[in-house]
Length: 278
Image (tube, rainbow, N blue to C red; front, side):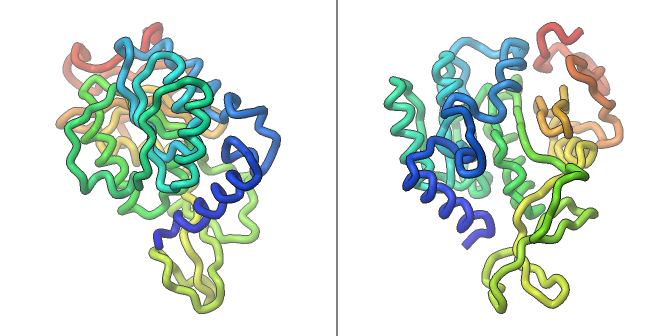
């Protein structure tokens, strides 16, 4: 079993049994299905992106589908995937109740890179999935799948948890060098992939909370240009494909809200732009 599977299966089972509508309902009063965590970010940036009418969207790790439904209600054609069948079952029901058409599918985003697809998207969305994709090889696979499915003029929009120096990791162990949070496994259980021995006890990868500069550098190394990085800890990002010659990580300038970096070389004629960012 993948290290991220059991936790999410159990969580969505609890969501279904309790009649909840989204992940955050397990931990706090969320304000309802429509009040999902990255909605304010999407409301702010979508009018600025140069997207066609009825843009094609892929959301991976969609959970119960609040962001997918938000986009579908605004005329986007949405394909939304999640690993957990319970999540997709709930998402389909909630979309149907709202009269929305969303192509929901049970699929592991980490397996997408190994599958060919002729479908290309104007927007690929990550709504707080990336922090649960911990291992380097899995993150590389996700980024490769996004690049392969994104149109040359498309956008990769991410909302993810990042390193917060005030966040506690007890129980658990946080590796400052990698940004990985490990959770202890039952004694003697080393069957989960990525299991690591720490202080004589087996732990599994749980979350990846990179610093904002480390996250930006990772995305650049993966073949993206970071047009904007914002949020309290730098976890909200707008990216585009970098083209055949990705810029080095150190070349990406610091961004401020509403800012746009200069092109590292050549013309921006074929690059997506953010309206009003000049």
